[in-house]
Length: 291
View 1 (cartoon, rainbow, N blue to C red):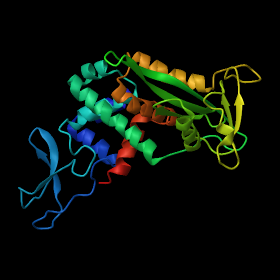
View 2 (cartoon, rainbow, N blue to C red):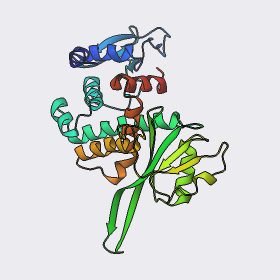
View 3 (tube, rainbow, N blue to C red):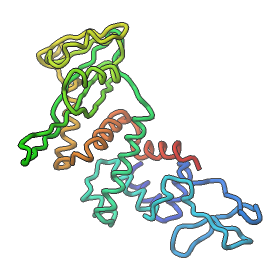
View 4 (cartoon, rainbow, N blue to C red):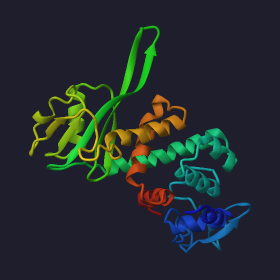
């Protein structure tokens, strides 16, 4: 969707409704009146959005949002579409507030809701990378440190990452520590048996080849994640991580409580990088909230 098309579908509440109905995010088939069992029709409702209303029993109405993802929100549909579009372009919260003329609280809330859609899709569509003889690069790094002045201790949050050059797909998972008992189950969760796993250190990946899978993983240690022929590092776990770090840097950091959802968003965007991001979000909503 380009800017001109967005302006067209958000030119009025009715245009926004029709677009969401086309995307199967709003009801298309008229519901029945609970009194006379006749079909309701779309009618104006003052200055607000249209409603489904019975032509005989005027008091019998139903919101056009009923049963949809938007049913619990009072924000105008035009504003919702604008927010989703700007989010799809990685627009900052500050600019969403300015361009949509909404409060910062509403912008933060809706961006969080959209990230939750990404998280739900990842939960519903688990995947593994690699395969027999296919190289998968793995690494772990500290993503957050929190120091407690009273206890004089520091707690850390780690992220375990992997990338497969063959498929161009990777994974990211928040973990509490980098101990083998934490990392090895993550290897089994995200990497197919028989994969050739590259890491730039032995510890804590030394026991990968001992994991009870068939065929067994092959573990190799390398000094740097680079192409053995060209020396290029363009398609490695390091460049995969670099994109995530750049996104967080542009956001001036991310709160610990929101880390998981932002990582899920980055991963979801990476998986759907060839798609129209806004339309893909609406597609998910149409599948989960059948109206």
